[in-house]
Image 1 (spheres, rainbow, N blue to C red):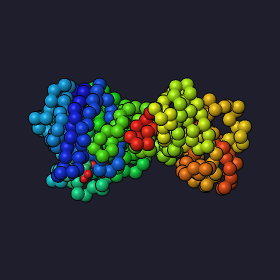
Image 2: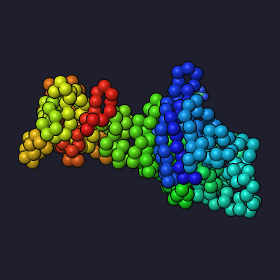
Image 3: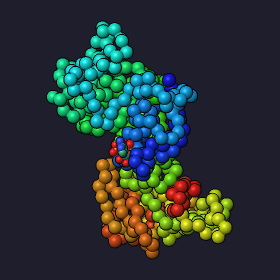
Image 4: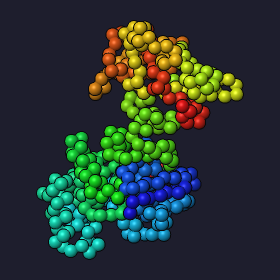
Length: 372
Ligand SMILES: Nc1ncnc2c1ncn2[C@@H]1O[C@H](COP(=O)(O)OP(=O)(O)OP(=O)(O)O)[C@@H](O)[C@H]1O
Ligand SMILES: [Mg+2]
């Protein structure tokens, strides 16, 4: 099985909670999809609907073009790692991992070989004869993931499988998940995480969820470089993408963006019938250049760059570099920059910062959708 399609899938709890709200998505060619979104946005409900534990109130779910709505979870053949990594408490770790194979009537010696192999990969061989209640949270999680990866299902569904583990173990296991995907190139993986780096690392595509909807689904580069809406833009990236108020005037070649006290000829776009349109300018902190002085933009004019007059507010240490904070002169709002080269810096100093035209994204303040 290589393709899963969700058509207008909704799941409503009680009267108001739209845990899934008209989800349309096709996962094709055994893709690795990561679901990312804030707590309560519907990620677990999404996996439960695919596995058959939860029945949608509207819409359809198809495996390779065939509706599975009337198929029971056992018939859908999904390997699922639950967020609470439920293990069978009365069974040893060995039996827990062997269970999905035994229930498919695999010969005992083959089961034994597979269980011991995956236990070694997950470094849980010493735990095989223990019962779940004596394991730590992280160890239980490892057993749950091992139990799902030990078999050949039609789809892998993993709900925050490594949330309880330390960073080093998580790194190792991420590679194991990647390897499992390489071994099952035609089997879709749907993987939920809160960790953006993990999402970037693992996925073919990331589906960003918000309030039961998918706001954008794209490759990590598409999501990062050209987010389709304000929610996706600000959810992804640390520090967050800057959004500053701006005004578009004119159209086509004469379309000009004014923001932060500067202007730049955008060259495409349309301010609309009134000749003016309020916009939000989106720019990633690492795309903001902070030259030492006015001439730092190397002679580039208003056709190439936007110059923003700003006041230095403060700085904060990040892992790799430093984040500089600014207020925009003559307008409300602050923004941050993570420049490659650190300028001389003093709080209260006046700076002209530079944004290249190609790094500018424009959003509609009302709908939140990208317009450029
Ligand atoms: N069985 C249920 N009954 C009622 N409401 C539910 C039920 N399961 C989930 N919900 C609600 O549906 C919404 C989506 O829940 P879901 O568990 O899918 O979120 P999530 O994205 O997985 O969150 P988290 O990141 O915290 O795990 C939430 O508002 C939640 O309270
Ligand atoms: Mg969840």
